[in-house]
Image (cartoon, rainbow, N blue to C red; front, side):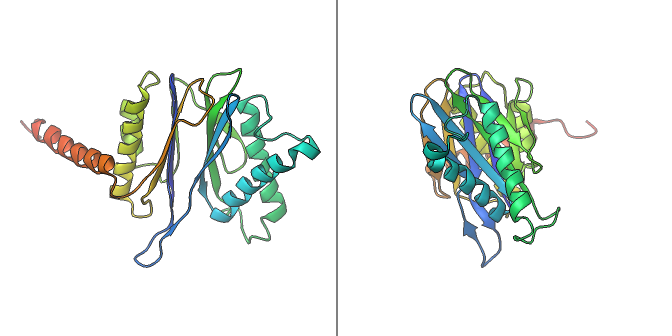
Length: 244
């Protein structure tokens, strides 16, 4: 399973994804679900993937091959489209292409052909933007009222995001929030696992900012997880009991 988050803020966007694709006592595989395209001074585009690994890898391969062939073809790619809206359309078209041309060969029926994406970043000339692209290739954009998207096993990490996330947050504060949503998910679902890929894009920089892989023994993540558990237990103990 997968858990990925994109949180859009006034100051930029925070992206995070887990890396587990199989879960079991003797069957665990790790693949990056975060893909980045960058032209310094012009654009940063980040794509998070969830769903059937064969499908999502095929989509990413198409997007990358289009960039390699662009000089000869002149066709649209993630590195020459003028807006993030057009980039989202481009990803949706790549997903539709895989469905139409390779779905049968991959042995995928309508239920098994599962893939979803979070696309975000900034292209020069517009503000940072964040989109969720669905299995059918259609998409929606984040707003001030709904500043984050989740794909994969999202239900455990959603409550804290619903309660806390606001567009005015500082970037470090938002990264802390996103990691806490991962901590909640990791505790409740073994199909989501470490390490976590984290990327912080700061508005109008047009280059990748902080990007790191957070391993299971990361000191900050362990400290954050322990402090959050203690804070929850303390808050719970101070609430009035039922019937009092």
